[in-house]
Image (cartoon, helix red, strand yellow):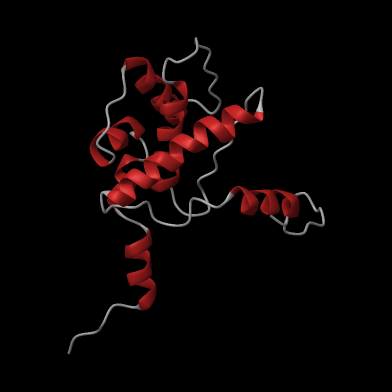
Length: 147
Protein backbone atom coordinates (compact mmCIF):
# COMPACT_ATOMS: atom_id res chain seq x y z
CA UNK A 1 0.00 0.00 0.00
CA UNK A 2 1.36 3.38 -1.00
CA UNK A 3 0.42 6.62 0.67
CA UNK A 4 0.12 9.77 -1.37
CA UNK A 5 2.18 12.71 -0.11
CA UNK A 6 0.29 15.19 2.01
CA UNK A 7 -0.88 18.36 0.27
CA UNK A 8 1.29 20.31 2.70
CA UNK A 9 4.40 18.40 1.62
CA UNK A 10 3.55 19.01 -2.04
CA UNK A 11 3.01 22.74 -1.38
CA UNK A 12 6.28 22.97 0.55
CA UNK A 13 8.16 21.29 -2.30
CA UNK A 14 6.67 23.75 -4.79
CA UNK A 15 7.33 26.82 -2.66
CA UNK A 16 10.69 25.85 -1.22
CA UNK A 17 13.20 24.78 -3.85
CA UNK A 18 16.84 23.81 -3.70
CA UNK A 19 17.67 27.50 -4.17
CA UNK A 20 18.13 27.62 -0.39
CA UNK A 21 21.57 26.11 -1.03
CA UNK A 22 22.47 29.62 -2.18
CA UNK A 23 21.29 31.44 0.97
CA UNK A 24 24.93 31.84 1.99
CA UNK A 25 26.14 32.42 -1.60
CA UNK A 26 24.16 35.15 -3.36
CA UNK A 27 26.95 35.63 -5.92
CA UNK A 28 26.67 31.93 -6.81
CA UNK A 29 22.90 32.32 -7.13
CA UNK A 30 23.31 35.20 -9.58
CA UNK A 31 25.90 33.23 -11.55
CA UNK A 32 24.36 29.74 -11.51
CA UNK A 33 20.62 30.34 -11.31
CA UNK A 34 20.22 33.71 -13.00
CA UNK A 35 23.03 33.06 -15.49
CA UNK A 36 24.61 36.49 -15.00
CA UNK A 37 28.12 37.71 -14.24
CA UNK A 38 28.95 40.27 -11.56
CA UNK A 39 32.23 42.13 -11.74
CA UNK A 40 34.50 41.91 -8.68
CA UNK A 41 33.20 44.93 -6.73
CA UNK A 42 29.57 44.04 -7.50
CA UNK A 43 30.24 40.52 -6.22
CA UNK A 44 31.85 41.94 -3.07
CA UNK A 45 28.79 44.15 -2.47
CA UNK A 46 26.32 41.32 -3.13
CA UNK A 47 28.19 38.94 -0.80
CA UNK A 48 28.55 41.45 2.07
CA UNK A 49 25.11 40.96 3.75
CA UNK A 50 25.87 37.28 4.34
CA UNK A 51 28.60 38.29 6.81
CA UNK A 52 27.51 41.77 7.88
CA UNK A 53 24.16 42.88 9.32
CA UNK A 54 24.48 46.42 7.90
CA UNK A 55 26.13 47.27 4.60
CA UNK A 56 26.86 50.72 3.21
CA UNK A 57 28.13 51.14 -0.35
CA UNK A 58 29.78 54.36 -1.39
CA UNK A 59 30.88 54.55 -5.02
CA UNK A 60 30.78 56.70 -8.12
CA UNK A 61 27.86 56.93 -10.54
CA UNK A 62 27.22 54.17 -13.11
CA UNK A 63 29.50 51.50 -11.67
CA UNK A 64 26.83 48.80 -11.23
CA UNK A 65 25.54 49.38 -7.68
CA UNK A 66 21.88 49.38 -8.74
CA UNK A 67 22.17 46.22 -10.83
CA UNK A 68 24.15 44.44 -8.13
CA UNK A 69 21.70 45.47 -5.41
CA UNK A 70 18.73 44.33 -7.49
CA UNK A 71 20.36 40.90 -7.90
CA UNK A 72 20.98 40.74 -4.16
CA UNK A 73 17.30 41.55 -3.49
CA UNK A 74 16.19 38.78 -5.87
CA UNK A 75 18.59 36.16 -4.51
CA UNK A 76 17.87 37.08 -0.88
CA UNK A 77 14.10 36.83 -1.25
CA UNK A 78 14.22 33.61 -3.28
CA UNK A 79 16.70 31.77 -1.03
CA UNK A 80 15.25 32.54 2.39
CA UNK A 81 12.11 31.02 3.92
CA UNK A 82 8.82 32.79 3.33
CA UNK A 83 8.29 35.30 6.11
CA UNK A 84 11.99 35.46 6.99
CA UNK A 85 13.35 37.41 4.03
CA UNK A 86 13.37 41.08 4.95
CA UNK A 87 14.97 43.56 2.58
CA UNK A 88 15.26 47.23 3.53
CA UNK A 89 16.65 49.64 0.96
CA UNK A 90 17.25 53.30 1.67
CA UNK A 91 18.36 56.11 -0.57
CA UNK A 92 18.65 59.87 -0.52
CA UNK A 93 15.77 60.05 -3.01
CA UNK A 94 12.79 57.95 -4.01
CA UNK A 95 13.76 57.83 -7.69
CA UNK A 96 16.87 55.76 -6.95
CA UNK A 97 14.66 53.06 -5.49
CA UNK A 98 11.60 53.19 -7.75
CA UNK A 99 13.35 54.06 -10.99
CA UNK A 100 16.59 52.22 -10.35
CA UNK A 101 16.54 49.16 -8.15
CA UNK A 102 12.93 48.12 -8.73
CA UNK A 103 13.21 48.70 -12.47
CA UNK A 104 16.20 46.33 -12.46
CA UNK A 105 14.20 43.77 -10.43
CA UNK A 106 11.27 44.10 -12.85
CA UNK A 107 13.54 43.68 -15.88
CA UNK A 108 15.18 40.57 -14.37
CA UNK A 109 11.74 39.15 -13.52
CA UNK A 110 10.45 39.77 -17.05
CA UNK A 111 13.55 38.23 -18.63
CA UNK A 112 13.31 35.14 -16.42
CA UNK A 113 9.61 34.78 -17.26
CA UNK A 114 10.33 35.14 -20.99
CA UNK A 115 12.96 32.38 -20.66
CA UNK A 116 10.36 30.12 -19.02
CA UNK A 117 11.71 30.33 -15.45
CA UNK A 118 9.70 33.06 -13.69
CA UNK A 119 10.40 33.94 -10.09
CA UNK A 120 7.88 32.35 -7.71
CA UNK A 121 5.28 34.48 -5.99
CA UNK A 122 3.98 37.92 -6.80
CA UNK A 123 6.69 40.49 -7.36
CA UNK A 124 5.15 43.27 -9.33
CA UNK A 125 2.17 45.54 -9.29
CA UNK A 126 1.16 48.66 -11.08
CA UNK A 127 2.24 52.02 -9.75
CA UNK A 128 -1.37 52.56 -8.70
CA UNK A 129 -1.41 49.29 -6.73
CA UNK A 130 1.83 50.30 -5.02
CA UNK A 131 0.37 53.73 -4.13
CA UNK A 132 -2.70 52.08 -2.61
CA UNK A 133 -0.64 49.55 -0.66
CA UNK A 134 1.62 52.30 0.68
CA UNK A 135 -1.37 54.39 1.77
CA UNK A 136 -3.00 51.41 3.51
CA UNK A 137 0.27 50.60 5.28
CA UNK A 138 0.33 54.11 6.69
CA UNK A 139 -3.34 54.11 7.68
CA UNK A 140 -4.52 56.58 5.09
CA UNK A 141 -7.95 56.45 3.50
CA UNK A 142 -7.53 56.23 -0.28
CA UNK A 143 -9.56 55.74 -3.39
CA UNK A 144 -8.51 54.72 -6.86
CA UNK A 145 -7.49 57.60 -9.06
CA UNK A 146 -9.55 58.14 -12.14
CA UNK A 147 -7.81 58.31 -15.48
